[in-house]
Length: 484
Image 1: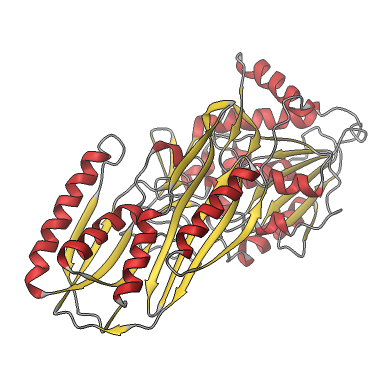
Image 2: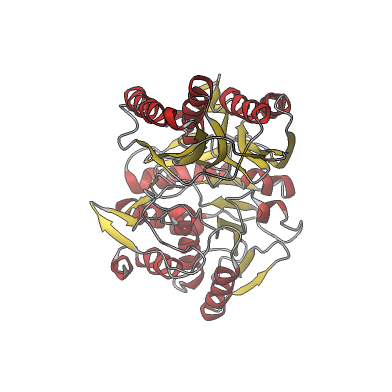
């Protein structure tokens, strides 16, 4: 609701509220691009949309600060369109409705878009405030970060003039990120000829209520993956009850742990009750295995209209085996940073229906050789099922620079403002910094932001109390940027 406009700092929350009024799911960014260009015009700053769909703004230095190094503030404009099962929200047309509870801003049944709308809102606050002191400031608000970092990948060389990059896409206040994992999308596909359904009955099995989450930031927490858990049930139903697979749908975003999956199984009429019993046993098993992690597991079966077609048995078995066998979750931690994930994968999306099977996985690693190893492992797994495997949207990791001058400056400001030291870390989540550094290798780069929890889920929220010190640090850092 509009009550978030009254939160402090007003420069962030007023602009974030305006962003919630503008639909901006990944892949549908015309409205937010026009919104940002209109904002820049009203704020009196130079702005353009580049060929990649990114919005670039430029604000001249405060008089007397012209010799300072140029800073580019960077965030992404798109948001992950996830919603609760009972939500009718249309991300392409409807605004995000927010509320405040226990000091956190939430959305009603959907993702909040704090990832990375809070960063965009902070940039807007800097651009419109004429009272701030700073050297030359650029803004880079990238397109379609969540679906493949396309805006950063297609960023033209030479477009930016900055010496320093402050990325505002981190999600834990009090931590400065100086490195992140690389990633690659792995897509496996197979076309098959459907066969007439010769079974007597059909049952739809739904698994929902899982926590889901960010496949980089939360992959180490051991949250259940709906596709992997469904594979256990389907494998048992096929092997013990002779069930046949008609279709499967699970997950909808490559970088989100899937919280829901559903399948339709065809089987003999006298096996329906056995399947329902199997479903209940599997639900109890999931609840027991994840009792400290997943609190709202729903796994249920309901009889449904008999589908006309099912998968050929050999193809069905191969696909189920591949889903069951493929790696999901953490593969390795960083030896030098044993609390940080090095390599992982997320079996994000499964669609099997109407003669086609499509799987999508996001594999991440801080090491290029381990990223290649994991991608090859997954490719081999799906190849054995006869699937065509393609790797795309690959991006490298961001190598840490612990001697960063801007990091030292930010650490000192944080210490002065908060009376304690900040934490410096490397994230497993992918950040656009690595891609931008590939085009501008001499930039000094640090990422930071306010507290955001459960991004990429309908439980996404932002802590109000973390935004004020975040804003104060950002403003002071721009004032303290050294001379060229």
